[in-house]
Length: 227
Length: 246
Image (spheres, rainbow over the protein chains, first blue to last red):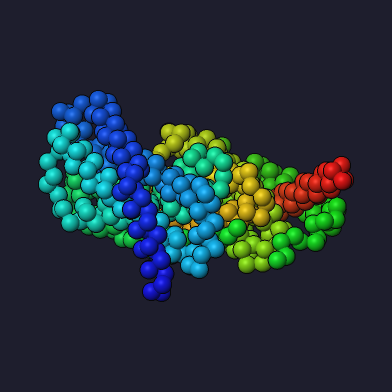
């Protein structure tokens, strides 16, 4: 068990370090999310009060589409020089490769969210009145579930020639219950605070979803990596 | 590792079971049509459109069953690694997608007259649509350009993952308190459940469900037969190429 985490942290550290050196993925994701925000601010007049209702959806649109960019890269970069093969033959548990990749991708997306969500609030002139800790929990739960399933499927599609096309098609249907719950919970926390109880039940759904899918992906990842 | 099932190397024949099922299904389809369109009375409120309901419910049931078969044979494939399990899972997913397509087309036709709208973003409709997309994605994995062992493994893994969503779909009308979709069969609780159905209608419904299930097995047998012929054709091609090369 200890070994599992140790190897996972080494792999995550390697990914984060190479990202720190090149700054390729996070920069691309940030530019992309910035462009999405700008496009939306043209599409929906930010001074209009009704626009407040679309902010929760926007947060998740930005997260999902920028995360896809990073997820596509996470295993494709390993296929160069047969790195993935090296990982498979190394004496580590396949689960720790998965765990390491999840940690690295999770950190990338969190960095992007940390910058793009405040920018979104600023540009749409949105005053945050809700419950901040709960909002953060919703963001973390939603992102984690999305990344854990996304990393798994990215590992699966990395073998295909058309992996960039295949990943979104596989991923979006699977995570749709999670995204629906995340958008609903965010909407309640940001716009109508009266229904706090139903926000909690949406969060429970997200928690259960994350638990089931994370454990399942951890177990099944072994079969994805097999040569 | 025993990846190739020896059973698949011979040119397959139509099995006895398939013939029996096939000749059983023809009268059953006719009887089901008779039951649905002539035997049962016309529903008072909805009129003739209600007839679609027999086939709608039956297709939905078979679709769920087909996806269940996919999950079971996916797990079995990962454990035993027999190619026949992968073939069954693949064919079953294709049939499931067809039946889901039937559900998603008959539903709006009925909904247009009952709810006065082709589509509504109600939990069960939404989740069924998601299910449809999930298994289309599954079929796309099966058409990935890699060796069959790899493809079969990925498909099995994806089949297991996506089956987790089927119970979510099934429970959706209970969790999200839908008002639009009636809970027809018994387990729905007291409010608008099983008791409301005319006995002759219930009989027709059960018979149609049974007929659709038989039809599913006929299609499954046929699909397996075709897949085996394909595998056999690939083998022969390979053999021929080897011969040419040597």
